[in-house]
Image (cartoon, rainbow, N blue to C red):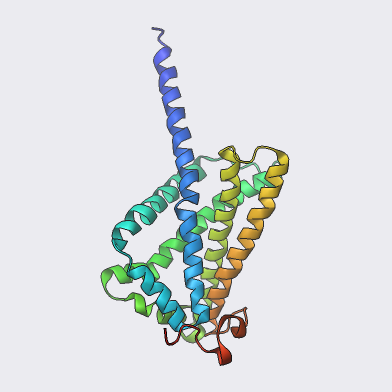
Length: 245
């Protein structure tokens, strides 16, 4: 065997590991992390329909059997892998936006930046709600009031609301652009035409998700005045649609 054979084999194995890790990173960004993001935004949007609707949505989740196991295996573990390996990729990547400025290079840079912003936002979001619940200092029935207190101006929370809005925007962009790159890297969209169509589709998806998330943040930040009129999300006189259920 040539003295160069072993280094070549090691490089090949390293390349294969890197390829598999990148594929897993791409996949977990869509399933389950991306799916959870959509579900989480949709669930929180129930708040705009009133306290009771939000409470029912949260209660339905809390009643799921084996919820802690599902959260750890299907949400937190994939999220941790996607986040940590994403940091590795961000540190290894070389940016050339200043030299070339092509749209794809800008999207690549924004994908890395929004990934970091999203990671910071998730850490603070967990600190605000999830960790207190795990420690027993907050119940899921208190989430509605806790979010209202944090994001409204009663505690000077407008800065926190802006931070949450930045987090929503970053996470939505990271997911939507991730869908586009996922479809390309996994060989789903090959032609230029299909890639253009996909870009428009994920852009519309991103705008829709951003609006849902922003509307919820605005609702809590303003004490109940969201962008969508209450007549479209509640009953007569702004009554909670879920009252009496």
